[in-house]
Length: 179
Image (tube, rainbow, N blue to C red; front, side):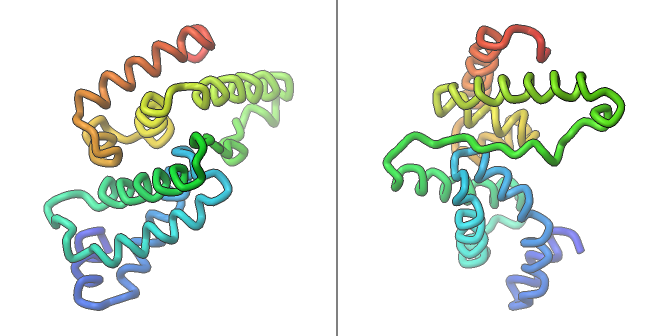
């Protein structure tokens, strides 16, 4: 069942159809919340986002893609969480699941890759919030500029400039070893 059909059936009261959407997007929503600063509370953010999405599904524009609309809700919930905590959002990324296959054959290379990844993530954490959000959406979540603009509720030009500035800061911080 594609997103359009699941949405249509959900709007007709089919909860199993909404479960399809939840199953399809939970991991991405969790990763988004974590990377935008929810940290250990990402699961709560995702749950609240899915509840709000279901409640507001009748206002969803059917000609638009569901994924960026949902991720916008996740981003808003994450922002609300970090604002209510009264501190700057902390980027918590779990890259253990993305272990390089080469690690089995090259333990030294795996250790170097892990160190490089840790330095990159630390540099990303140190970016100003708007630049961090843009870089996370574009490169960690692999969203297009338009999707990033929709998720963050920014103009596309702001996404482009924030991404550009964030990448420039990262290049200064970690050099060109990641290019």
